[in-house]
Structures are given as C-alpha cells and as structure tokens.
Amino acid sequence: MPPNRNLKIRTLLDLYEVLSEKERIMVDILRQIIKENLPAYCKEKISYNVPYFYGKKGICIIWPATIPRGGIKTGVLLGFWYGSKLTDQDQYLEQGSNQRIFYKIFQSPEEIDEAAILQLLHEAIALDQTW
Image (tube, rainbow, N blue to C red):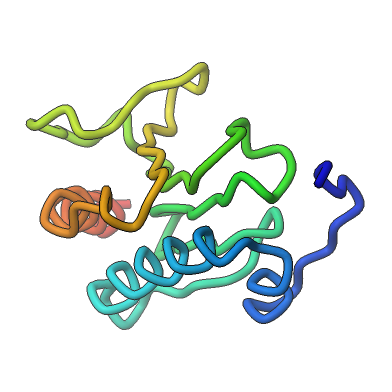
C-alpha cells in the first residue's frame, strides 16, 4: 500500500488503525518502555503523525515506516532528538543525514533491546533536565 501523504493522525487510535500488526506491536513495546521511565514533567503527544516525547525540549520519537516522511521504508524508528549529545558507549544508535537526531530502526519486536534503550533514555532525560 503506498503511503498516504495527506494522513492526519491526531490520536494513538488513529495511528494504530493505519499500522500493520507488526508495527503496532513494536510501537506499543517502545512506547511502554519510554512511558514507564519518563519523569512526571515529560509528556507524550502526536506530532508529525507519530508519538513524540518531550520534557523541556524533545527527547525521542517513534516513527513507523507506514507514516510518510520518516525516511525509512520498513520497520519502526526510535530517534533521539539530541542523539549527537549522548555518549552512546555501545554505539547502539545510527547517525543518518541529520546531524542531531540519532536513531535505531527495528524490523521485529525481538530486536528491541530494552536495556540499551533504557541506558540511552536515561541519558537523554538527564540532558533534558540541563536545559
């Protein structure tokens, strides 16, 4: 199915309706990891048609391939807005053409490494608290 460039996602229900089952599962797992570990001052909203998590500034974003303009053809991208400022000792994240956002693309739920994500998420939250 070709991507719908006029897509207007306003809620998580809207998002889940357009995703494949595999993408829904991966988005759900990633959202759960992030939401369970964000401090109370951080929020989630739908921005650019995808889940976006922010505190004082952007922290991370989950972008399924089904949603246009994400730059990926398959899977689900977890991007950290200030990934270039994270230590990422294990070099878990990739850097694409964007100088700031570093990301990891998952092709299956089994690829999601909760411990690696938590390490980066905690570092991103600590960075957010310095702004």
